[in-house]
Length: 182
Length: 274
Image 1 (tube, rainbow over the protein chains, first blue to last red):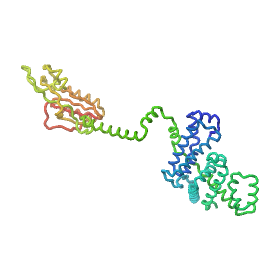
Image 2 (cartoon, rainbow over the protein chains, first blue to last red):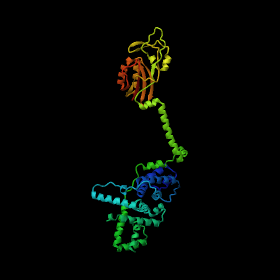
Image 3 (spheres, one colour):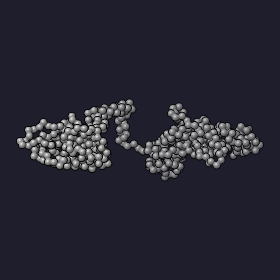
Image 4 (cartoon, chains in turn red, green):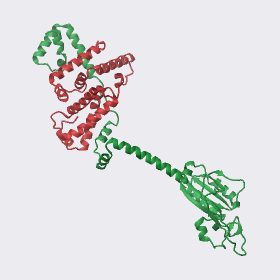
């Protein structure tokens, strides 16, 4: 994202529509991806991702730039997901994790393709089964590439909490994926 | 350092977040513990799997939907929304509006024959012409076949009253005017009616009227409806075969009424549709 560019931030704060459009286009896949993997439903993920950008749009005038713009967006999206998961008012059932990410197969090696497909399905299932507060941390770290400090800032957590949740999430995943780890 | 303590540092090791002391202690343990080295490899493999996840992609049109939703609402729309809110007021109003529209449509349908006719679309009707009580014929002037004036609509009939000397050619024969005009009367249907489906409605209408005029007839009524034009004319009975041929030439003529025995003159209603 280009959120660290002061000129870009200034245009966003000034409410320039073109700047907001650039922000949406640059960050839509990542925000949607976090929501999808947290909620397990494309429809709910789109709702949350859209709400994330609308909230950002309303609050951009007061964004001081203490955190990176991308981290700020991840924070909004994460809180919306966690609130939705905690509310117990979810209208849509979680989709089968295996349907979330079906990648086109290479086709050259059917046995290898089958194994890869099984491994991916197991990985999605394992992530979906993680406790929510661990799942968001491991997604922000290992899928989105945020630093510990950025995760702590986005989620409002202590650094030590981020570290321990991340470690527990990875350990949980390792146990579930044991048979694919040689 | 125990195996348990060493494994607690695996995450930080992978993320290079260990302090120098932690790193030294962990390296020392791993150097002498095969189980923890194997465990670390599996741990690295797990993290690699997660980091290798294919990035998700927002659905097509997502950005457009966000931008549309973020656009400021026009002031008039905010005002309108404020007027009809809250919902307990808005919903009954909307329901009442729907009912009202339905009632109005029903009333219009019942009160307007043209609408009913257009909906049925099965028969063309028009204001009717019937013989007016004959006025006293001018001395020495026989009553004969009707003329164009005698076929005209009421206004024309009234206007032309007294013009008893007009002569027109009907079917090639000279016909004397008959002062006994005709007047419109809505009860009697035209003797002949039907529907003409044609490619060029205007040209067909012009051709019909030209033929009617040549035959000494007259146009009684013209009105438009959603499908086209309804034309009612009156012509001498003898001119009907020629008009029928002309209708067949202009398009697909679908008669809905054509009696075996026709009056003279005969009224013909043509619904020209394209």
